[in-house]
Amino acid sequence: MAGRPAEPEVIWARPERAGRGPRPAFSRADIAAVAVRIADADGIDAVSMRHVAAGIGCATMSLYNYVPRKEDLYELMVDAVSAEYELSEPTGDWRADMLGLAHQTRALMHRHPWVPGLMSPVYGFSPNALRYLEHCMTCLDPLDARYGTKMELIASVNGVVTTYVANEIATAERTRSLPWSAEQEHGVRIGYLLSQVSTGRYPRLAAAFAEDSGPIDLDAVFERALTRTLDGFDK
Amino acid sequence: MAGRPAEPEVIWARPERAGRGPRPAFSRADIAAVAVRIADADGIDAVSMRHVAAGIGCATMSLYNYVPRKEDLYELMVDAVSAEYELSEPTGDWRADMLGLAHQTRALMHRHPWVPGLMSPVYGFSPNALRYLEHCMTCLDPLDARYGTKMELIASVNGVVTTYVANEIATAERTRSLPWSAEQEHGVRIGYLLSQVSTGRYPRLAAAFAEDSGPIDLDAVFERALTRTLDGFDK
DNA sequence: GCGCACTACGTACGGTGTACGTAACTAGGA
DNA sequence: TCCTAGTTACGTACACCGTACGTAGTGCGC
Image (cartoon, rainbow over all chains, first blue to last red; front, side, top):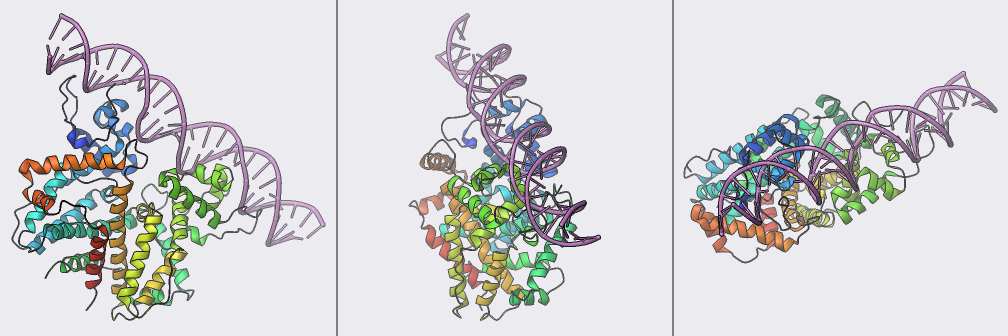
């Protein structure tokens, strides 16, 4: 009669080992690792309670002893990959430190393309998230500002990185689980876009397309967005 | 044998009325309106092909004559609410114009809380999106910059608004379809957070929480984020 | 040592997207 | 003008999904 709670619950507040029953056969780390592996390999939609349970080697409903709701599984996953941050000693140059962290986040999201899509549903106060936040705050020690402002800085940087990489991934990954190639999809959409723009109804968009026809340097765009964000907090 | 295409397809490139068969009983506008109404009332998860079909008054599979894939239904929805923008004449003050548009976006997303969650899966070149983009470009005519830079400005502003409102909504809306109240949920999470912070492992976070214990002025935070973003493009 | 809280598991329910087959209908080409 | 090909409309069916619930076995706290 245990299972799902009738009251709200943060999974991190629930102890891994409950006092009473037989000792659990798996750890949260095991479960999170399997879920991450599935998501990396087959996309976030392949992360079902059944697949994860099969992956760790137990029956579907047994997984609910460890993870009361699927949302909590997502929380475990995000926390697990958050452990990949290399939180090295702050250098004293807060801009450089934050830039480095932003690049780490971008690389992390490229390794785990499902992360941006999980950022909204996940509340974000997991153990590793707290470690990350505290580290950011430490990097920002040299910055003369209120704590509230520093929080806004961290949120802004993470927001920029998340939206930017989400776009990168959405463009690259749209083809996953589709029966045609990314080039086909891209070609069709660009074709439609050009057909619309060339109607003359959108003269400025047409001019914009004419301006740089070649492929854009995504890295440079990312760097400029970051720089501008940090500039907003630099005095 | 019509139905789903074997090749990629942009729904906007497909004509509403095909030459041959009987005239369609519904328009895309009807379908989008019903889907938007369902999403507004019961959340995006309630937007299923069955519900929408029932809403417009046809069998489930008939809907696939109008909307080949569910993703396309989302595209219709986002385009439909994009028509709500009031694209009034540019004033000549590009900062004021962009601020006004950003506020419109925020209000729009509050009216339709499912929009932020659909921004990533949707490609974003629907008719109304193109109108919106062209209008932004017109507002930016007074700004002396390359078209590419103006595109980055628009993307940045929309990114800030989207992530910001997504957070607002995620916090407010997390309780939807949960058997407990938002206050309970919030209380439990804050309680856990405080218990962690008060362990002493996160001294700077503790200081940040001590700094402003009262509720934060979300509108002011939003305004500051916008201002900083525009500052980055102002010379 | 007793009892209770926990683990483990199978079954079942209501929901989802959508492939596929069939019948009715209408416009274009002969 | 008629024929036919392509479209609309609809029902059935399949493979999934999250998870409520009941049952059996296990081991710690009292």
